[in-house]
Length: 457
Image (cartoon, rainbow, N blue to C red; front, side):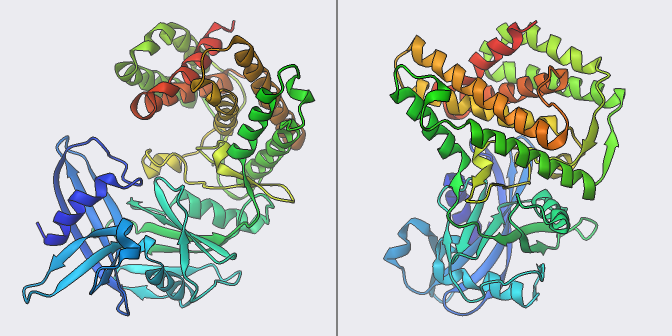
């Protein structure tokens, strides 16, 4: 093992973007190249982690190298490598080193090829060349930099062969001039070590949306306003969110419509419904192993999934967002912007590019309204009155979202669709596993939702 690989083995598991926490490492290898040789030197490394369970992941790790340690970058410090001649080089996470962030956009403007990496500008708008980037601290599976007020750069940490759906869909939607997306300015690819594989998407650059508000924060602020008013209903509170929810439904329908217009579609058949129901059942079986409390809902969930297997509901399969929730949307002065079309990062890239029903996205947003309504209840003593008010807020905003979607698309997504109900249930099962592993005290939120879903006749 190289000295750098040894350092990365110690450093990577603590990073927020590292997606296999808890898995035992069997080995780690890295290969890298220099992207910029000025001060600080910038290198880019593909780090392959093999696990004792036989799996493996490849991560992208940009590193800035300095001759002397820098106190200002202490939180980004990876470690020190000593050369054969005794010369020390200090390695830092280059995405947190502002001095190392300018080469990305310089190479993108110049449509460069550096080693195995290829830069592809979209050629549609100004790229702020020479401006340093500031890291977005809320990122998890990826790492983003904001360049001034013009652009945001997203680095995809886990590499897989093939075009990332976030790039693919934004590039396609650019032709529609949809007002609910941030335009794509360019993307970067890296050749796979195996020439028979497609290049992997490394990063993308989009127009930055300034003065925008995160959907989750707006929604939860509305819930706080409701809780602060002891004798008012959700529609009577000054911070009522229903109008925004309705506009969000219309924006979602607009994006779905344009995706269907410029990307492949096909009608769902009985085989697809049967396969979908089977996959949901398999995920439930696996989830019960992690969350035993799910067993009491299993019979009702299997009935919901069985209804999908037998469905004759006309559905057009198309490309969808795949991970839509309130944290994936921004409200601006002119409307809603939908972000992050890469789907659930934990799923294989090929499955994220498959055609699906738009109801998956609708279900994801409906689940998000439930979370926004109930997340504050988790931290407080049980309060029947607040629980009732949370349910009222969730139902009001879920209905408003569906109204907006229906009016914009001509399709009622919430009219008793067995498919929507199954997608909601499947999402709640996924949430149970996530909460059990990461926030056990939040597990009550999806479990309570499953009680309501499985009690419907």
